Length: 350
Image (cartoon, rainbow, N blue to C red; front, side, top):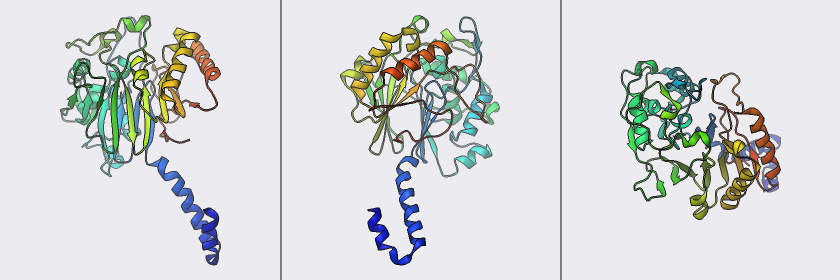
């Protein structure tokens, strides 16, 4: 095809050849540039197609804590800096920087906390109250939103909090999936999932108390409803598995034609080689992705440096051993990667 185009523009000379080459190069990149993903650690993602945004979790308050007796609150300064520095569009605001980055009418469509532990749900209430957008909220998330209402909206430049549109993850107790409405060109499906089990998570099962208040302990954030997220855009599909839990439901009814998988490995470092091997093989056999991004392996006890954002592995020594295990398990037909910190990338780039 390229050869034919060059033959047709021979009479125009070198300028035409340069122009046609540039056009072809642009044409090749358009499909990847219209949709970006941005990874903030844990399982927090922003998906952006230039008009609509989908926010998974929205956990930005990375702070030192003691897991046994520490108590903490959403860090409004960190949340504000993250929104302003990474292009999130929380709706009408007097903030000039946010107005500039969202001037084309770009809009945050939905906030999806994939379950209710602190490293997924801590900031969800603040973000929902700031934006007034839709948030997927079971009873645990409603408790987080209510507790967040008592924080100062003035710290984010708001006269008062907005009223978010809180919707349940599933329309009945027996439902295992739900397609969300009003998500722009995205099609977003929630698929019921399970959290990985080890000694710490057992203590945080159940539903978050309605009387939750900040500062709160880690144990105050109860698991609530846990799910995976399938995101489709045009004819492209990606799946987020935010916790390495029981995969029975996903294996029994797996989504088809998923090219990119964002796969949590947090906790597998504690479970060991055999559990990792079983998990890895089950996931890849069921989903059959072309690209796997490893997520939820990073430490979350230090704020990001926007000049040089980077991830540090949680439980460094055994997490590095886990990376070596996965390196041994991967096959040539699957590209295994780690997403960059805070920088937008094409989730479907091959």
